Image (cartoon, rainbow, N blue to C red; front, side, top):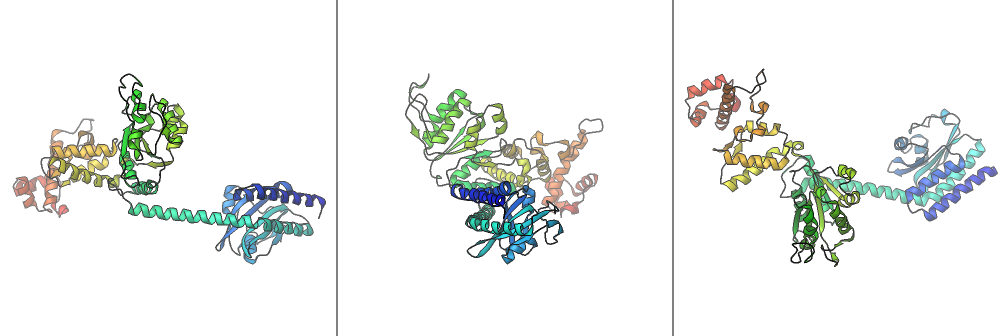
Length: 510
């Protein structure tokens, strides 16, 4: 062995020993060791694999891209690396370009004149992985010496490798357990105050269940009218704070001059009109939940004070000097593009990160069309009770209109739509003409435009309305024309005539 190679090996051992003493992160320690091999000994590439079951996974490397590293997977006994792990014996390949057993799984190529040395990593008698290098080819004696050095290095690193493997396995178990819990929570947890069963909402339910029990700050994002306050209430009622107050503040509805006073309270004489001391929402809520709706509209001057509350859990009233501690849980919501607000300088980036500890995204109604009728039926039942009505269903044309509409106002707009329809309906069915004009497009109402671009004529409009009445009557009587005629106050002959003119077939409704 040459003095030069001995010096390089000593430098690697010194570097690794120093890392073992000072490097607390095992992953970084192993990466440092591989980098030392590359820097001090002229190694082209170095890799560490870990055994998990009957497979080897490349967990650390130098000289390889992320994609090449991820491709470095072997079955025990497969290729040179798999064989070393399976037999526990080191292998030296003087030239990888002439070796059929060298599989080149990483894809960097079988470069001529490049040697490959692979040694097992043992811990308590078990082969737990391999350490391998690619090095410009050397005489056989030098390669054997290099293999011996790698075996020594593998023994030194064995405890660290075993710890790293345990950490990797623990992370995988935790990940699998989290996924299992997420699936179970999504399947079984359903807040009683929220309607919807689509996939996106099941994800929201799982997130509510995950975050409810702790004190983490939650930021609910979604368009206006998607039900952000309902989610905030669901988190509160599923938490240990459920018997404590839930206080909601709409930051957009408060004048800028009063926001600070509303949140933190004020002392007597703090400003004109402050005739007595007043508690703010943080004091009123105590250890309960404070819901800050439309947090994106809060003034910059108040953002600084809110940031302090989130960091230090204390505040002062306006005009006061006494520090008041708060145990309130903060849930915020916004319909704004917060990233854009930060870029424009209207919202503090540090406050955003304090609020965004656990983000929940609420889908727009147009993204959850499968929940449309569940929501519509829920609101129908609600407003039947409020207005003393007995409306039993929504007609097919009305459903088609609702499903075709883009709902810019989301669930809030749907609720208003159903409330209006309940009010104006004169029988037990919500029909298309009970819906607001904004839903009654030419396509959904069957009144398409004429070739000259004008609206449909009077006859077309009447026929569309008449057809809807007849369809409902045939549905109710399961295609019985005579019974449908009686319900409509027509003779059977007249109804048959109208059905024929409209191109309908009563058998379709049996």
